[in-house]
Image 1 (tube, rainbow, N blue to C red):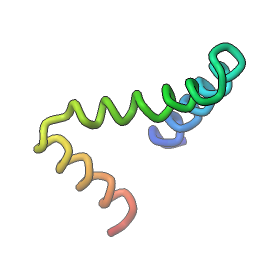
Image 2 (image 1 turned 180 degrees about the horizontal axis):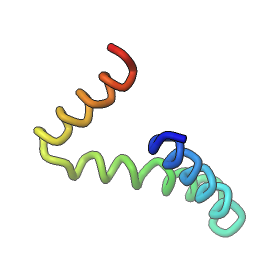
Image 3 (image 1 turned 90 degrees about the vertical axis):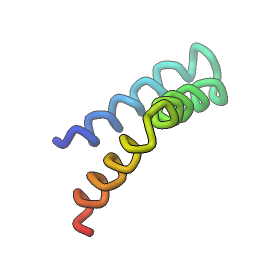
Length: 60
């Protein structure tokens, strides 16, 4: 299993565990908001590198 798949499975698990505790919309905000905030905290050069690696993994 690739690292991306592990992260995706972990995110889904966190979302499912949070849903009964804090509600659907708040858990959705946590699952989507944390990775978005982490991406926005990267430097522009780190974002370019991340996009380049992602494209290379897709075979482009």
